[in-house]
Amino acid sequence: MKPKELNRRTLERRAVEAAIWGMPIVSLDSMRQAFFRDAGAQYGDIVYLSEPADWKFLVTTPNNSTRYVYLNFNTTGGPVVAEISAASGADLFGTFLDAWQVPLTDIGRTGEDRGKGGKYLLLPPDFKGDMPAGYIPVRSQTYNGYAIFRAISKSSSAEDVAAAIALIKQMRLYPLAQAANPPQSRLIDMRGKVFDGIVRFDEGFYASLAKMVNEEPVQPRDLQMMGVLRTLGIEKGKEFKPDATTQAALKQAIRESHAWFIARLTHYGERYWPDRDWEVPVPPIGGQSGFTWEAANYFDVDSRGIGFFSFCAPPKKLGAATFYLSTFKDTDGQLLSGDKTYRLRVPPNPPVNQFWAVTVYSLDEAAFIREASRNSIDSYDQKVRKNADGSVDVNFGPTPPAGQESNWISTAPGKGWFPFFRFYGPEKPLFEKTWKLPDIEKVK
Image 1 (spheres, rainbow, N blue to C red):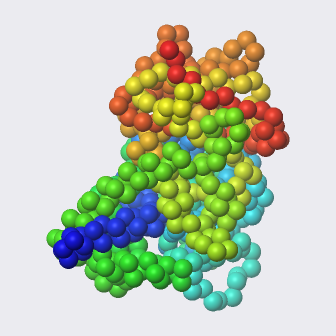
Image 2 (cartoon, helix red, strand yellow):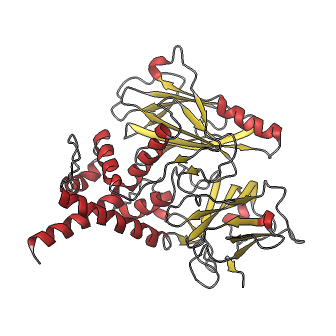
């Protein structure tokens, strides 16, 4: 093999590994750019949805049953305060995360404030000052970070929805330096507007990675990867200006990386029930490590990369407030296709004390299907028809079966898809595995 070909193959191989390693921080930057570009927001602003999300809220695997809150923070100028209201008339839960999407702390009834609200103090990695009284300290190894919260109403009544939105509107985000006279945060409602925080698998991926490498401290575990990145033209303190040979290698590598993420996602989690294809959409090391992906003897870069291709904002305490399952195959063992019609029969008495939901995502983006007419069904919806025994038939396909419009979720012809089944307020029968979801069956 000639030196030129060896160099090309080395660049491509290293660029694929860089994409897998960098997936969480590039995903963070993609959401942050949507925050700036699509919402017209700046640090200190709070983006929210006054109605459950439709397809235009493009982040990885969101729900469309609750009302979302999204914010970015940056502590290069010093600590930042996030004021969270006490849960009253509705619930609020979610997580603050660092730039690598490591959960720092949860909020709400299952979080540090236990639903009583409080002032969270988001600290920079180099913070060495005295901790002021009256704050919940949140330490981070990065300067950038974000939070995603969900405001959960007791029902879909106007009164309960108003209580959930009131919780959102009481939030504030401001520098600690302004704590003596804190400003009101600007709240930006993105209802019905495109918020596109999905990673683009093109050459821009590496430009984003280079930018984030420059913004954040290098962690000791990443020193070897920093050496790899130098061969791609990504180096801390230097402008990213790849030559033509490197650009060609990056273009090929990012296509391969995208294909790798999709292929690995369909074999990612572990089966929840031995006789079902439903799986926990994250391998055990995710939750066991607190989503640092570090074990005693290794750092699971592959699992981290696949994870943040398919989701964002993991909680600090997995399964405390919610529990998710996913599946990619029908009862015949075939990958789910947007061309076909399927049915999932949800058994009676789902083990939740709040609500359940099933939501569909595109396989190539792990996001809502673009232009989808309906992407979810949940137990809030009074129009969903129940069977005589209390079970619910959820239908999936490009068009609704006759008479099943209220129980139908749309798919896109020619596109692969997968669902999440969410349990909000999961109860014992789920964890004891005495209540089971059947697999999705193709309608003949």
